[in-house]
Length: 329
Image (cartoon, rainbow, N blue to C red):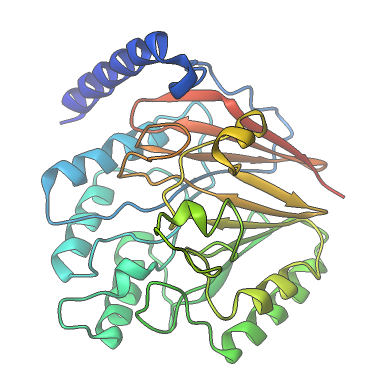
């Protein structure tokens, strides 16, 4: 199986290289470079979103390509973040297939799973069952015992705060209890003087080109975002310094600042020391920005900066046009 995956990844890399040669304006600068990770890196982690696992071996193998790439990384990963829509409909069979994909690899020392709206859509429209699955497979896949769909953890001294919807709508529903909990977690984490990483499947309303990039013909202002509690969450996050919100959900492709006039959004938005990072869909080709799947972002955290690098984990290639360096305050 390992040899077959390596062959397929090589084939994908060749195909993408050819596409890039003929369609550079669409595909960007396709460069198979090695990340120059510096010795003083404090934290090194990957982030992907929207796996949309089904009970299909093709999707399992597509994820396996990326997991093998992470496992064989030149620099081992401290964590892998999966920012929601782990499954397509939250069904037991889909969770089992997700677990099967992870079972053959150790992509990172820590795995952080986040709930997305698709993970709440069980065939029986049973939100309680979807929560049961999420908690159960957190333990199976990540070895993490949790009691709710929101939780926090520390890795290398850095705080990761995971949010989760408390209903089964397309948008998020965050209770006041969860928002108060978020504020407390943020306050505690801020005392460490280190960057704080918050993971929500849903981005802030009207960020990253929303609502237009959500794709509705007549979008409402809140479409594609967190929903009614977005302003409350944003207010909490912006109270603190060096905060990174990592989201997915809207299936935007990678873009950089030079492409903002073309696509009307960028993948990384900054407002002071608050940074909103939106991930592409791992499983699906994007319809905006870089046309690719199997992609995500790699974060290198240093004392004075965070370097974000775009990578095709399925093809094993760095997309150097989409790198960001964010200075910490």
